[in-house]
Image (cartoon, rainbow, N blue to C red; front, top):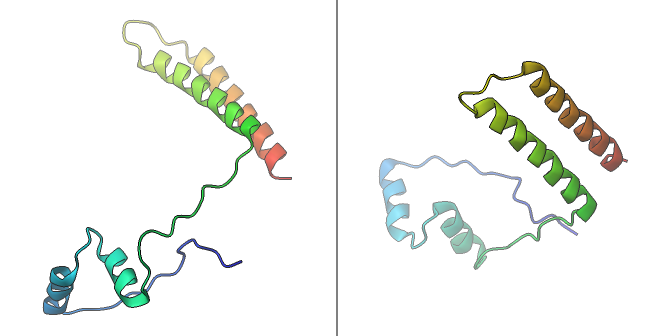
Length: 107
């Protein structure tokens, strides 16, 4: 099955007059989309469904994100002395969690 991701690009050179003419003919907010539709007959968006992700992985990533938010809150809090050892320990814990996830999902 061919991929629906757009990975190829075409670069063309235009004169200023040609470019302005394209902009005048274009009835879309995006010139590239209009060119695709006009030249290829592709109408509307060719939506690629999002990849299916393991719910367990999403929960683990959400937990890691929460840890990072807590660390950022401590760093950004004014009026409190910042315990650098505690912050580095928190970041090291996040790094360990990411390594475990990387190993689990790279197999």
